[in-house]
Image (cartoon, rainbow, N blue to C red; front, side, top):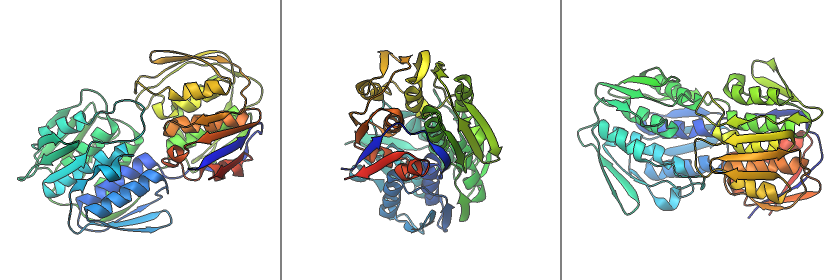
Length: 418
């Protein structure tokens, strides 16, 4: 099992490139199931979750050709409309094939999703939406079985709460349903809009993606196309925090600045300088002591829950008290205990964390508990005195492609060991 060994104390300087968004690539890969024609996707990151999804699509009946960051998928027919537990137990995004399979061939058998343990992310909203579109759903032996032998039909789906994967799953199901589907209280994340762009290129008729109301007019069939995935806003945000926490000067390239607007605002309030040297770049500079700034996670365009752990690491180095409120997931403070092992002063009170700083962090042996928690430990290690050894870095490999290489290019003393 790989580990990271990080020697802290170096201010990062230079450029760090942003890759394609994992959370956009996963639904895009699933969308390729909706057509019998080839779909070519570009800027696909080489991370663990993507490899898992590609293996799943091969089992379902797709041919998958990978050439660098380009993936070509072709599914002339569905040979096995099933997502088995053995394959998808480490990836919650497996539920994204549910909608496309039911829409394409009228049936699907998908294991209840696994993944990192940051709290309940129930699939009930997917199930409710598919039932509104005419699917019959049964659950047994840890699997969701959905059937719609006569096809899906359009309907109005009112989500009880905002769900990104639920919005994506229902949007993919609705593009081949008869009539109009309206998704209300839909997720507004950029990844949803990117999926809609792909589906539109394939012949879908979608309006309102990126807003809370999405309208889909069903079509009889979709065609193949080419599409480039958007930049990963969470990776870009992580690198911005890396520059700020180390008191460095880092330019994050290949990003979409407006997608990390909430984080940029907090960094600026904390005393860091964030400028935009180009249409697809952000530069962060930090010198002197940062100020503590409260934050509450929200659905987009609010502060992303996937950046909460990284921000907590940053606040350990800021002057004052920062209150971090997590509203999306109920168990997303597991990194706090590991940060405390490094010397952080963090008190948990339900869904809020109270971080007192600044604190001198010292290297320690720590364990990554989930994808974004592992990123926060890397950031903390960059400023800790001495060496930090981070175990279970397979979590970070789920969503960051060669993060150690990218950080090292900006001066970080980080290496991967087996």
